Amino acid sequence: MKNLVINCGSSSVKYQLFDMTTEKVLTQGLVERVGIPGSGIKHTKTGMETLARVVDFPTHKEAVQYVLNLLVDPVYGAIKTFDEITAVGHRIVHGGETLIKPTLVTEKVINELEKIIPLAPLHNPGHLQGIHAIMEILSDVPNVIVMDTAFHQTMPPKAFIYGIDYKYYEENQIRKYGFHGTSHDYVSSRAAEILGKPLKDLKVITCHLGNGSSISAIKDGKCIDTSMGLSPIEGVVMGTRSGDVCPGVLLFLMRQLRDVDLVSNAIQNKGGLLGISGVSSDLRDVELAAEKGNKRAALAQDKLIYGVQKYIGAYTAAMDGVDVIVFTAGIGENGVAFREKVCSKLGFLGVKIDTEKNNCRGKEVIFSTPDSKVTVMVIPTDEELTIARETQKCVEANK
Ligand code: ADP
Image (cartoon, rainbow, N blue to C red; front, side, top):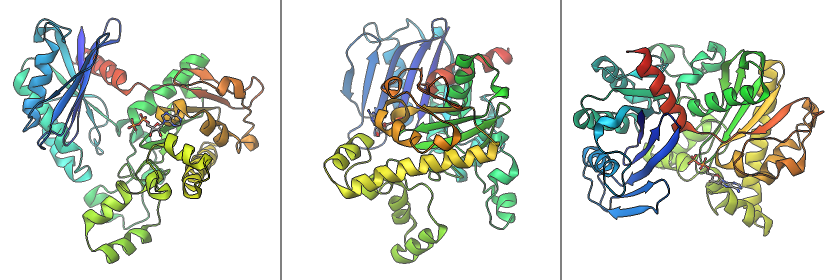
């Protein structure tokens, strides 16, 4: 059984082919600049050097066709024929309020995804193009969609409603949705598994901190709040995204710049660690610059640490306690100094960490001390594997 996981952006296609028996990745790759001059592909068969080719990909269809051909290539591929592909799982950024669990793709589901486009205009059109391309080329293979927003659909109304006229929720579905759901789901379940306790008996805060970052509160086995919102801009400061800003900032920028795209660029592409530091969107560069005395870099770093501490405090209050804090994604998994700094202000919760155990990167570890009131852990996330597993489950349930 082999499942292909596809993540189609507006101009990119990321893919991984899994052997579902071993759950190992057989091949993976990335197509960039679809529909833009200079498009190309990077493809890696596990155990081999990466193949990089410049290829003209006018649309997602040509890109998907090229990827599929590479999967059956005698040298770079991992399967002999397309028949070996059991199912295709598609990562979908936004499922709105209707697509709330992994779902087999049908005509009706495609219509639903189209209706949700206004909520995710930058992402969902790319996903749909990917689905159409796969359906055309692999017409007999089931497609499953797995939504980033799904895990957060258990949030109560008081967590997801914004303080604006209710008609915008009723008429336009304006509310908090949350993202990175596959990751929050995976690491919270894995934390419970590692601790040998049912997830429903734990109060967990999951910190997914990468280029994009979000923090979630999980109580009774369900997400009750999360830091990202209608869009993946809300929450802690990110690589280039602003995180929480006063809505007045947007009004001010709209009046000054008089152009939605310029405002969007300011808060999504030119903000965050990059905007504050003026150095980089990558925390490693920011940390290095701060060490060398760059004050804005130090401020950017502090802003992120402070933001994570505040969300942990807020979510502890929201859950009336916390048993487990999990760090994941690029910064969460690798930021040794970063994690130590975040935890340095959590003593009031009874958090005590072992700095030697914390000195690790990219592997599962409990780095709180045995007498810490809260278990603090690193759990590397695996969103693609989760999508492959969910795809499998969904296909089997629909047999
Ligand atoms: P994405 O959200 O694009 O999936 P990742 O989860 O890969 O991003 O996270 C990327 C970020 O992880 C980088 O921007 C970098 O700031 C951070 N990172 C990676 N390694 C380290 C490290 N050793 N120390 C601090 N931050 C790190």
